[in-house]
Image 1 (spheres, helix red, strand yellow):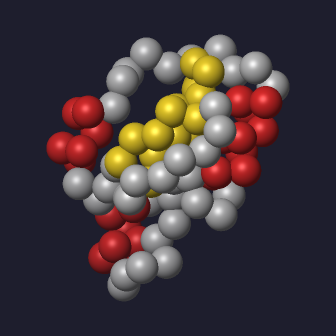
Image 2 (cartoon, rainbow, N blue to C red):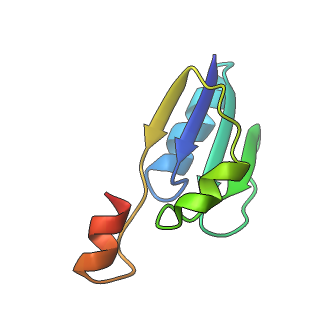
Length: 80
C-alpha cells in the first residue's frame, strides 16, 4: 500500500517507520529535510498550500500528524 504521513515528528515518524517495516511504501513530510530508513522524505510546510504541489498524489492512505507547537493561535488554525 502507498502511504503518506504528513508531519513526521514525534508521532508521525515512528508511525511512518512502523508502516515501512510492515512492508508498505511510505512517504513522509516535515518542515525541514529529514531522513528515515525506508521512508521517502519530502519537505512540506502545511501552512503554505502551494508546498503541497510537489507532493505525489497517488496514495492509498494519508495520515495527518503535524504539530502546531511553533506558533500562536493563527498558526494552530492554519495547521488544523
